[in-house]
Amino acid sequence: MKKYELIEHTSDIGLLAYGKTLAEAFANAAGGMFSIIAELDNVKEAESRRVEISADDVEGLLFEWLNSLLYYFDVETLLFSGFEIMEFGDNRMVAECRGEKCDPSRHRLKTGVKSATYHMLEVDRQQNRVRVIFDI
Amino acid sequence: MPKWEGKLEKVDEFRWRIPKSYKKGMRVDGLIYADEGMVRQIIDDQAPEQVANVAFLPGIVGSSLAMPDIHWGYGFAIGGVAAMRVSDGVISPGGVGFDINCGVRIMRTNLTREEVAPGIKELIDALFYAVPSGLGSKGKIKLSSREIDEVLVRGSRWAVEKGYGRPEDLETTEERGEMKGADPQRVSQRAKERGIPQLGTLGSGNHFVEVAVVDEIYEPDIARAMGMDRVGQVMLYVHCGSRGLGHQVADDYIKEMVRAMQKYGIEVPDRQLACAPVDSPEGKSYLAAMRCAANYAWANRQCITYGVREAFCRVMGMKESEAGLQLIYDVTHNIAKIEDHEVDGKKEKLCVHRKGATRAFPPGHPDIPQKYANIGQPILIPGDMGRASYVLAGTEQAMKETFGSTCHGAGRMQSRSAMKKQFSGREVLSALEARGITVRAGSMSGLAEEAPEAYKDVESVVNVAHGAGISKKVARTRPIAVVKG
Image 1 (cartoon, each protein chain N blue to C red):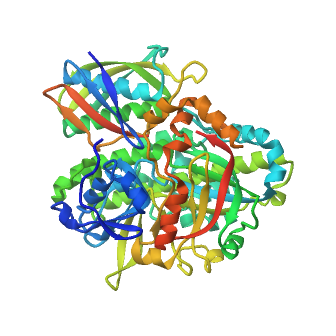
Image 2: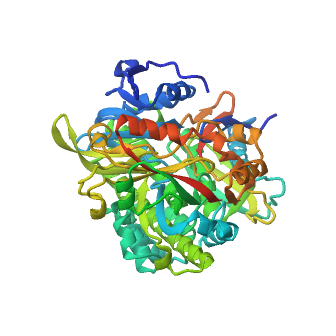
Image 3: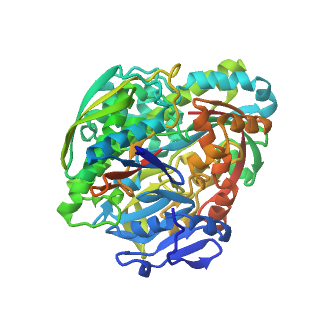
């Protein structure tokens, strides 16, 4: 099963992420976002961060989840490649995110992501699919 | 994305109206500045729908405007301008965008192409090392958690007092690089943490430092007043914004606005347009935080300017005064501002959102520098890496029609992935070299995404702004070397 696919957008980039569960679709959306930022093949799972998110609804949860990971990239230059969702509900999730500090001599960096946006953001519970457009 | 099939009426050669009857809930018309050829391309994606959606926002006056570089954004179209009454209108963080006070500045030099060209490779390398750029880059400036608050309140003035520039740089920066009403207590700890390591960095995407040459002057008197004396003169551009700090402020307040909309009973067709009354606690908090991010961006461009000047003088082997590195102007193109404008013959306080649009104030306006009182505000329109950029001046017509606003750049027309399918970074690099443009880029795939072919021709964009009278062409420059983030 495909984990995610990128969506064409004139100035930015979007993605559709899939999963057997909605939690898995959230994890795959995060993986898709970091694959826009860098080639993830040689990102080792050397460090991990426990990320706790709460929001008013499930769309807010997706927005906050992805943007929180961008915060770790900005502040600690952490590239995440593995995501384990430990708890997942409409208003709250807890995840273990694994990756390593970005090293331009080893990691091939691609495109900076400024933020996930609410534009066309969609959480489809029937199909366990999410859609998000990033500001690049 | 499907073609847009909404209602669009031709007003004249440069103006196209989306009547408010197009969609139930539009409070005003949409108005797009474009020529016939551009319109065909504009309706290829959903940008006009976004212009219509912005017309839903409470308190909007005039029309929901789109400048000629309009393209599909998120929430607002890029190139969008919307003015809301402060008394009963809203402010929307989505109408400013994530890169708060993304902007551009231009410095003049005393040198000509002939003097700079022989050492251009050395110069671009020096600029590349002087200005940290690309993903994950950290600045050389070490800020304490106390100092970040000073940056947020005092912007460019903080930088100048620290030695990163001269007092006269402040005179020629929009808002003097220090927007009043900034309150660091309204900025989250997360935003500050993102901002601390990144001051003085360019970032990635479409941000750049460029060495350019004046290649045509349309208004010699105005150009001279700005310090652009002759064809062949070398200019330096810096384009970047508020980095992660601005992105976090936008994230934080979009979330807050989603909540506020329920509280105030506001409905919008796209959650990215989340908003609150300008005069509400939420609206005021956002404005105070947005101004902090704007000041951070001005301090950022000022610190980068210091690096650029230092590298330029070192490579050229001259003192700053000999090189004549004066800042002509610095404009912001992602901002919301409280301004006085005339609405139906009455002066009114408005909250003007410019999302990928530049202020274009006319001669005599009190908010432009004294030295430009007779010529109007300088407006900087960077094009793509391969073609040209323009310097324009503000006009009275812009005050009448667009709340003193005009375009901000070339505007994208092809997606990043489409570019990467067509070209590799290496191909873009050698095509630019063949045109006499030296490039240093942090990322080759980033370079492919920013290929000149991704953009509209900035000339056609500027010709519409000039033709419609919302700004006046002053001079054109061409790149000779570019540092790409």
